[in-house]
Length: 119
Image (tube, rainbow, N blue to C red; front, side, top):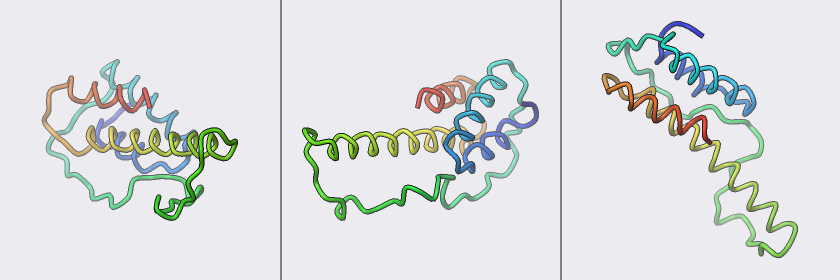
């Protein structure tokens, strides 16, 4: 991966498929770590109303989800499902921070990419 850091971060942020997004985040972090990406701080921040996420599973207001106890199979499945949503949203939040804020020290971007990779 070469080119502009912010363009690459934006492309990652827009990806909807979890496997594609994770692979792209790894590539972005690796390219940034090996200094193959330039940060054009003067480039415009594009609006992004909603970051990329899969169509399914459908997002539902937590108030509409039945309560389940962790002692049941359904309860444990609901917990794993909730964690997956949290992790995917954390990737998007980290990418958004790295993309949106221009002119920060390099460590700022390294830290946010580290968060995205960890999630």
